[in-house]
Length: 281
Image (tube, rainbow, N blue to C red; front, side, top):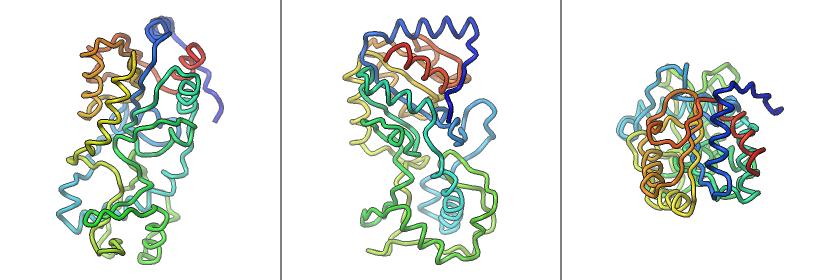
């Protein structure tokens, strides 16, 4: 993907100058949300213009076979396009900042794995990864590809070649799921679930501790592409605020952290991260 040529308005140029001044010479922790991956073709739940959508909760998935069928059918149909997404220039800019020693790593709310593909080495996947499948009973981990093959074999009726509407977590809208065969654990027969945090589910404590450690060892916090609607993001912002760290937020539209930001840039993440990388690295 070619580097985007940003058309910086005077207001945005001034904000970039202030953000550069705030971040320069400091070790920066980074928190990213869905807005960082939109230029890779993965839509955002809450960004400006995003359609209203109510994701499935963990309680629904766990308690109802119909919900499990609907989730797995949609996830299976959406996965090929989701997994075909590639890092954009914003992901690569963050990798360069880490390589230059400007950042100490990335905490991401995304489950797409694009930061790792872009070359970032220390990545805390706060909400997990769609590439891993976990048994909810025995804890066995399976590769997504192996489960995909099983679903293909058990569900020849699925139209895997048609156009699907993809969502940020990689699923698609599917209405007729009565005949769908849900894969189960080949070790114990338990329910399988992508190793991602559903709505209504808690982030594993050890994962949050790792994310918190990045903020605690940083001198500033850069938040990119997150509306900070999810509590985990606000908690990390609050840790930075209590330590009186400078906080820079880059996001199109309002976020729940705007009033606590040292600098807020109402801008696209790709072009802004590329410019910050050029200035800081």
